[in-house]
Length: 248
Image 1 (tube, rainbow, N blue to C red):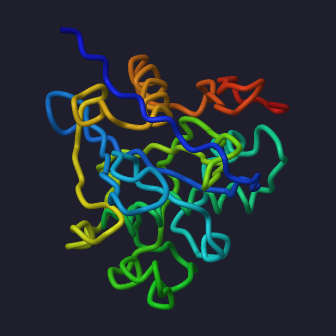
Image 2: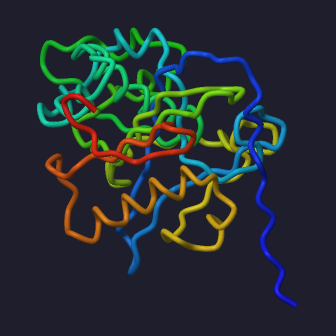
C-alpha cells in the first residue's frame, strides 16, 4: 500500500503582525568528499517551528546595530541587502549581517570572528551575547557572508519575520563554545548534512526552498555576490518567488 506523508497545515488564524527583521546563517563544510550544511533541531516546546530542523537564526536586536566588527561588509553584500522594499539604510544592512553571526554563536556555539584591526574597539568591552567573542579577543566578522535569499513569513502566523538567509564557510569559525546545544536548549541537536538528505525530509518548506536555491548557486562554482537573490513572499493567496531587485 502506498502511504502518503502527512502534511501539517500551519495555523494561519492569528491577527496581522508586522514582520520583524531576522537573519539566518547557513554554514557550509567543504572538508569532506561531499559538501555539507549545518542544521539544528528545534526544541519541540518552542512556538516557532517546533521539532523542525532549521538553520540557526533569529531576529535582529539592539546590540547588532552598534557592536564593533572586525571588517566592514563587502560593498556588494551591502548593495544586495539594500535591494527591495522597504528601503533600508547601510546601518540596517550591517545589523542584519551581524545578527546572523550572533544568532549562530548563541544557538550553536560556532562563532565567526577575528581579532580587531588597528584602532578598533577592544573586544574586552563586549558583553552579553558577545561575551564569547570578547573572552577570546575576537570581533564578529561579516566579511565572508553571502546573501542567499530573503523570505517574509505569510500573514496570519503566530510569528512573522522578514528574514535574510546568509551563507558562510565553516572554515571561518574562529571559536567554539561548548555545551550550547542540549536537551533543554532552543536547539537540541546539531547535524552536518548533505543537501537533500534524510534529516531534512521533514524540514519546513521554506528551509527546503532556500536549500534548493543554495544548491543551484553552489553548482555553478564558488559563491559570489553577483548571483540573483530569490525573494519569497506571500502574494495573491500563495507563496511567490521573485528575484530581489531595486524595486522588488
